[in-house]
Length: 189
Image (cartoon, rainbow, N blue to C red):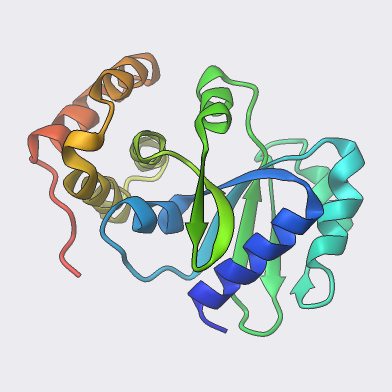
């Protein structure tokens, strides 16, 4: 099973489960920007306690997923994963933090079709900002390259006022300015 097949499988499972979600991370930057190889998937899931059983059941069988790990996600780092037993690829699930930007990302998610599956995905602007946040946490040319790829592909379609507003709030102004000016370039694939 490759990344595309895994993504399609996960989207089907999430759609059937009824859990509110959106795709983020490298697969989201691949959608909006310049694709690169990735070995995991990242989803944000809104997971009330009543939905724990639904998500565990949705991923049981072909995935190694522990209900105790899902329950532990209510504490930092607010994350759990499922390992695809067919490919050993990992799917990370993040619970949104109760912070304004996380709430805004969930509110702004958009419906698209990925490989024939209806899907919810973070907006291009939110992917850029999220990549800048992750670069601040763990500096990486990969995060910046992904963000630059989204800027390069989406260009004039980006809501620059939204980007600047949140960059100011999140203290990401310098990184955003470097992306928008082209100082940070996408990685060549």
